[in-house]
Image (tube, rainbow, N blue to C red; front, side, top):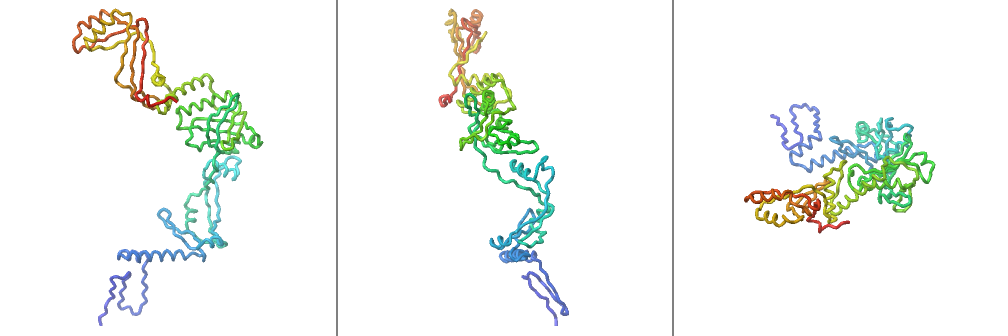
Length: 452
């Protein structure tokens, strides 16, 4: 009798037996092969069900009866996590970890305890690197062997750190100086303790975290003074323009006012805005920077003019380290527009160009016998002023020469007599009774602006 093979074209595994003599045959199909075959056959729901069954089987293989494994993807690897069956189980049999870790000696400052280290790092909001030597997993009183879990993977290959607790909200304060008069330097700052160092024997209170504030205030206080719990402290005060805000007119003005009034006042006061109460008061403080009062007043007067210009033209300057003569000239022009006052100067000689013979002769004949003439020239081409990183367009100018005369009347008359169409004659003027020239500037947008 002829023996036929077994045909199962749609089966997951195909097996053919011939002359087996009752041998035992074991066919093993891996889950991967089975799922792949189901997907090739378009049996997606069956493939997913198979995958879920494998997942459930892994979860239920947990050694603790009230926990299961949960799969987690880390990078390109899959690891397991411990998961209680419900919240009540989590309370009755809490998951905990025991291990041994060390902190590098370089993390510590001289004479600093672990508690001091935690405080310093918290104030700076810095993490502390930890070398994890080993980690044990416990559920209740049962130790779990779990070399393949997320925690063990992290213990072997991960980077461990102690993350600092978030700092409480900062104190909202204002900076005040007291002398014969009270001077409020800044209306709003956010201060907090930012450093405590046994090595340097000091604490620092600052607003270094307040990145949108153009000012950086720092108070350095000796720890011994703090421990004596005085109402007033000796300290070093630093008040600067924050990096990125240098050259802005208003911040630079505030710093100069601070430098000025610290020389006239003897008390620095940090006032809690909400409680309207002094939280830091010192009659003994030192500054990194001091400057002559006369120099400060000159700088403040200059900055005051710039603020006036900023407000009128609706712009913000950023002053460089050097101010050129061209910058000063442009500032005078803008001030003259605001104040509606011409800029007056002296001259030794000036000239205009005449290109029309009839007009030129008429002008000459009309003014030849006068002792002095008034000449006003209005320039039609608009000007653009560039100043401290800004640009102002639509500026116009006219200039006036008052009581001037021709530099050489006879020579000019000969030029005009022989002048032909297309010729241009340069008419030179010298001072008559006055050697004054006046420049009057205007701005097309001036009517839309108000001086503040």
